[in-house]
Image 1 (cartoon, rainbow, N blue to C red):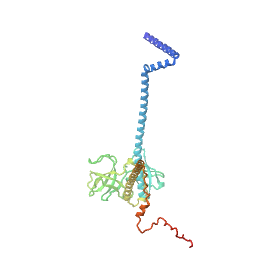
Image 2 (cartoon, one colour; image 1 turned 120 degrees about the vertical axis):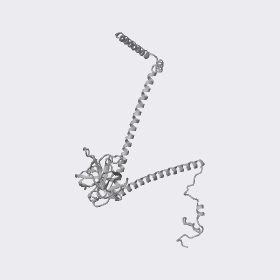
Image 3 (cartoon, rainbow, N blue to C red; image 1 turned 30 degrees about the horizontal axis):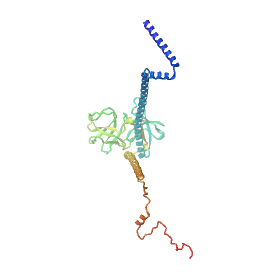
Image 4 (cartoon, rainbow, N blue to C red; image 1 turned 180 degrees about the horizontal axis):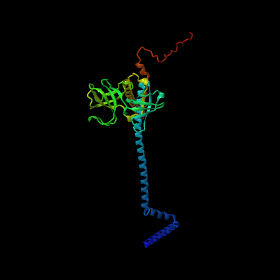
Length: 371
């Protein structure tokens, strides 16, 4: 082992001495000879090293460009996600504006904040309180329908329970007033009927008269009985009938109009607004106004696109006419300029031309001159 190490050291020493001698010789050689030797070394000995360096540079640039492209695609995807969220929020705010425009008075808008406490997923903190007229047992609504009810009130905030809370109950009826009942939250995560799909956020409409059969898709609204919720606020739509042991009444499973996870901005109805008043027309008008606004916006976009296309076609036609005129070498007479002979030919006979002054005869006296 020691002999092998000693021989390797001698080889390294010999190579070092040879390199030093060659370096000294290179310094004293003429310039032309040095360049010739350097070129030969680059083409033979150093060529593999140069190619390896070029490949390393290309690989590094490709790696950096890939990282830049990946980061750009990630930012675009993130922006698209934020854009979808902003569009949803914009639609909700537009719906709130439409609902407020139809209500006109007796309400305050608020932001519904989630409560982080355990077991409070069915409650929200509202950013309005008694200073703006909010009182306990006032309804909380959204553009889609009923959200819940205010439970406790502070000067600047309040706590509201959602319809999914176990203490929630509301007197309800079908939109055509053919069936009445009481709406409660459906606490189980699936329907008790095998024909009804399992969902988490559902309602039950209990105590419906046995003679009142409701079809799936029937709209359920508040009935106004009980003095808490005014009549006409949408609650949800019927999914189907639940099989129960009650033989004198029916129970229906209802899909809510407002899902608790979607509650963010709401409207709190003040007590003066809900006393003995029906709000059925309010929700119908708000829905029709929102759809009309969408149609108007779409029509405006189509009109703008059509006008832009017409202007482009007119510009292209004018450019084509100018190109044809430049080729023929004859100027085109403007459309607004017409020969006087054509005007004379179209003028009816026996009618004087009132657009031009009549020529004065040489021997005719001027007006006001003495003879």
